[in-house]
Length: 226
Image 1: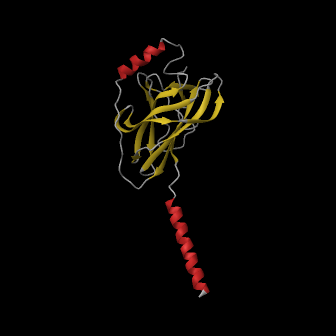
Image 2: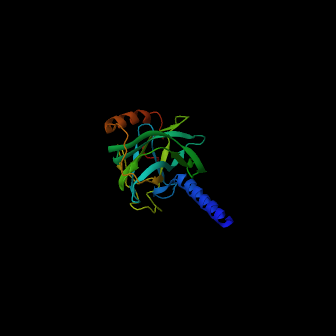
């Protein structure tokens, strides 16, 4: 009798443990990375109307995008608070799967040889579920309290390991550019549904006109940092 009671208790404990483990959501993981931050070559403005965009490839099955980390160059004393993030089917166009303002937190900041703070910026969000394929991630409208320009680190995809890397990249009014340092975070999903959010593709001419008005205010505000 005692043996039977012990067996039942052990079976119940195993079942409870299984339920607890099954209830824990899968942790976000890297689903695409374009290599580590370079920090000393160049960087591209992603505020004042400038919109660099990079491709990324998903190859591990249906994936829910849950976050983004990337390398940012900031003026001394500046802190990036947020940026608008797009995920689209084409560079700066096509189907908009995601279009939201995302809050970012900096870590691992260092001062580069040009005097900029180079930080790893990370933001999490409830992103779309996407099938295997190639998509585009865009940064724009970066916000710092000082109103200074903020830049996305250019690394040309050197040191990347994901299928489909290095990324292709482009910028409104500039055309093809070297790709940037970033990592897409996500979790595997059993859903085959692709979710989208509505976005408006800006007219390239209006972006250039908007940006050109700020170029006259400061000599350092350019698409490309150097």
